[in-house]
Amino acid sequence: MTIKPSHIPVLAEESLRLLAIRPGSVYVDCTAGLGGHAAAAAVLLGPTGTVVLNDLDPSNLEVAQRNVQERCPGVRVVSFRGNFADAPRRMAETGLKADSLLADLGFASPHVDNPERGFSFMHDGPLDMRMDPSGPLTAADLVASLSERDLAKLIAEFGEDRAAGRIARKIVQERTRGPIKTTARLAEIVRSAAAASGSGIDPATKTFQALRIAVNDEIGSLAALLAAIVADGKRLLRGVAGDFLNPGATIGFIAFHSLEDRPVKRAFAELIAAGAADVSDGHVAADEQGVSMNPRARSAKLRVIRFGTMKTDMTTEKIEV
Ligand SMILES: C[S@@+](CC[C@H](N)C(=O)[O-])C[C@H]1O[C@@H](n2cnc3c(N)ncnc32)[C@H](O)[C@@H]1O
Image (cartoon, rainbow, N blue to C red; front, side, top):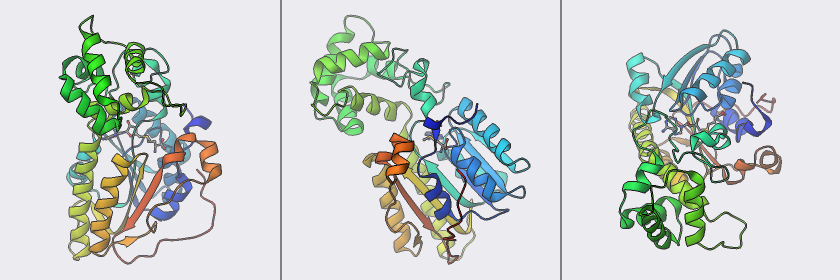
């Protein structure tokens, strides 16, 4: 599979430029996806570099490997299938240390494009939403098992939906008529409980986001990865060797909503206070052209920091993405 225009990686040029990827270094992609960022990074690393690809989704990981190898034959590729929360430990166990690390958070386009994966309220499919198809819990399991109170809490917290109470009540009523197993049925139930806001956004959007975040433990995984970066980063800033980061390492996160961006901002602020450089000077957003190439970029925020004194290469040379 090659990358379709809809898979143009978000803020790719900006992130790779700010990460200042050097030939022969080690780049870690915590969320390999289809390998858009990683393939462009591989070109900068060249055949003496190493790309570490990590993804929960084995089919995405396979596409990413192929794209990286096609774009930069000879580059060393190390693949970790699993949660990025475990990537720091796996790096340390493998004896690898990152010179640059990127996490482009959330789902990938095949998740929503393929109804069988159960992420989309636009097409009917099984109510699944697992990024890792061998994961223990589906969205249907959550919808079947949570109490009305816990469902309301989940939709309020991870969907930030003010109609959470009404939606949870309706779900609990409807599931007594038969298990809610498909995306179309859940979407209908949510739409019947929450009136359209007039914004043009489907009322099911927030409930689907909340269930996706819960099924994949997105906030917990992010917190674990950030905690490992904060701990290793502080070691580097004290002049002590890191477990999985090299001195001068650059770290980038691309977040798509405030539940993702807030913890990144907080962790980076702690590291900047401890002496890390704020390479992105707060956050960078996509320009009009970036949004027209990939509408998902509209809400994206890129933050990049660096441990150590090495200057980010602000070359104006074009980076091929
Ligand atoms: C936005 S996509 C990444 C796209 C990628 N940067 C590209 O250019 O193609 C996010 C990817 O992260 C993966 N993912 C999400 N949460 C994860 C986690 N906790 N651990 C590992 N992978 C995760 C998803 O399966 C998805 O493939």
